[in-house]
Image (tube, rainbow, N blue to C red):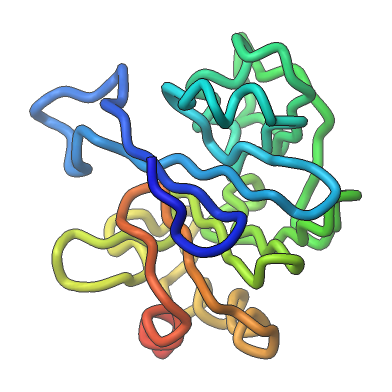
Amino acid sequence: MREVTAGVWHWKAPHPEWNDRQEWERLVSSYAIDTGDAVLLFDPLDVPPALLERADAVVLTCPWHRRDAPRLGLPIFVPPPDPPDPDPVRGEVFRAGDTLRFGVRAFEGFEPNDLVLYVASRRAVVVGDTLIDRGDGLRIHPDWPVDAVTPGDVARRLRPLLDLPVDVVLPTHAEPADRAALERALAA
């Protein structure tokens, strides 16, 4: 675990469903952010005990990033499930356009339930699967257009983030990045 910037922590853990056929790396990122009102865990997996003791809630970027969330005993904020999901994550459902009471604002990524989150108090963007880095810099996920959504469509949806003060970008499938990386990714 390391503190990326004041009140923002990053750690990596092996994904339990990873296998050598996956295109993403075995180690995935999780984050904790102290908003000033609460300590939130984003897409948590193997939460360091020091952070778990302080945590007030879990926020998921997409329902399939449930990871350890159901076992932590904390309130969960989750995008709508993919139908038909036989075992959806139980929690408070939120959607693109919503702002959670912690000052977390949701933007639509590739899908209505794949959200990119803006945490105003820390000027941070938290990204699940929409933006990744496979060794060539942060970019819109090239292999995941759904329902005829193109990377250009996603870039247009997310460009309002560039009107906000952003200091750090926190992708779950990459290392933390800066505003310049977000600008390059959304230039598509």
